Length: 302
Image 1: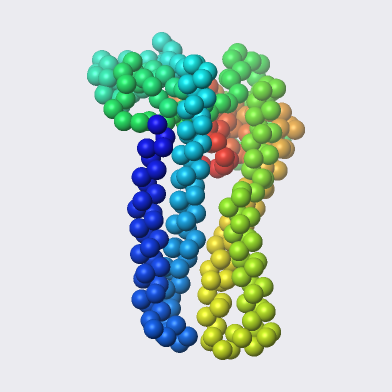
Image 2: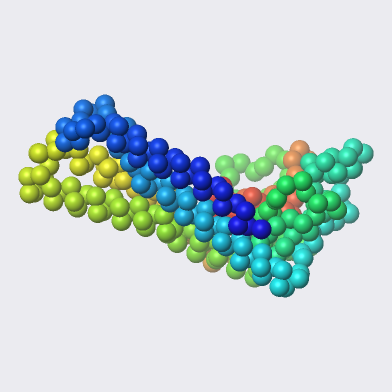
């Protein structure tokens, strides 16, 4: 069961104790005036033992309890999802059967729907616990009408016509437009970690400014600024990433409103067709298979 993985908390608890022990040793018997070469590693150990490691322990505990609840739901439902490779997608290599038996090529998988635990892999029970990553995307449209690009739009997208293949466009299906809207909504939604980081940076900055106003900062020689500066630097990078995701969500919304996708087909050297969203310039599909970023659960890029 999932509770067996609670042993993972033991090394984290040991690291927390060692972090606080190292912090106490570095600060020394007189913590009021430690030299800078001991203060910096002491602050790092304090952040690790008092922040990152306890947060990791809480996340592991949350995942374990979530997996346990999902496994119990699977046991009550008694349902197994089966995934099979279609005959058209089977590899032609004669050695593919040996690779499939060793787990290098997955031809079939039986997965519990809620906990995502893999029961059977290529008809055999896996040697160790494995979890499947099951994602959903809009199905390929099949045989649809393609339209030639207007000359002005083609010049705006490409400096010159493609030498290999032909560039046209087609209408997005309703399922594809719903998927794009969902990805755009996820991209501009701030995560809980970002909000907590911004809160820590704000509280630390306010407390440091208060120490300057009251004159307490001169007494500790500016040591109160170390943690707020670190939190602020991390917050700037995370806010920058969030702003990039927000800008990308606006481009995805523009793609959804336009309702078109560019189709580069008839290529001889690479898989064909390749579909690209015109506004965000993201690859939508390759050879009728969804691109990797569409199969990510939380972030748009990746």
